[in-house]
Image (cartoon, rainbow, N blue to C red; front, top):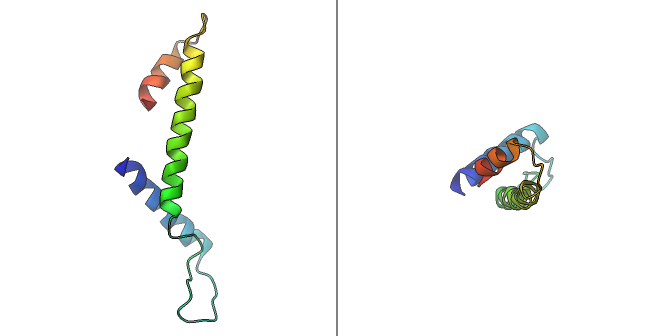
Length: 78
């Protein structure tokens, strides 16, 4: 979980660099484009996607003619 959060922080930093600072007229106003909890939201999105993939792959592996690679992919994300 910590590795995913660290990765999400790097994503936020890259997005902030690409988007550039906001042009605020008030000196003390926030110049960042993304919310303070952007890394947490990205991490939660990754965890939700992993959960959805596990469910989908789990359903696929139960089928009689399931592709061989499905078990490998399920093992990687588990």
